[in-house]
Length: 113
Length: 112
Image (cartoon, rainbow over all chains, first blue to last red; front, side, top):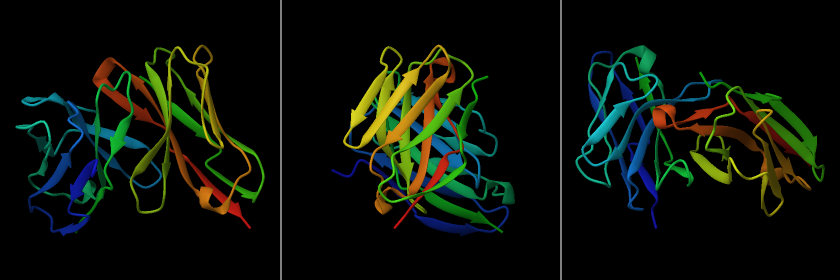
């Protein structure tokens, strides 16, 4: 079983470009999350979703957008890339986060120059 | 606002030593606490999940304890091995904001 998968693994963007980070889970989890991890910092929540069609902002949502049209997929969109968005992005999912674990994908390393 | 602190930030031990990693959090109103392992350039692997009503959880050579009232958790690693070298992260789940709050991690190196 694949768990949580993310594509691409690496990406370099120029300032002002746009891209979508893909995330898919095959565990039928309702809860899905996007985090970013900056060097020496803990992970910070960007957006989360509690089910198809329902999304909400986390701590650091500015510059990002999400959608959740299916249970399996939770893409993260960067509209106008900025150097401050250089980071490692992790997608995660959980059956019920107050009770069960969160499972993480392998991450996407993004550089904006 | 929940804040999670992990001390020490880095730790180097000889193989075979037992060790303890510390995690503290400021708001004791948590649902659960999760310990993760992160290898360089990789994602997070869940090690142990402790519910707020539990005192400890064990998995193989790992034992995690939770003292919710004092806002502390420890991860005990027995008989450490070079393969244990990684960054260990703790995270607490609080209902508000429906999110995990992460510490900055302890980077562990187990030397031969």
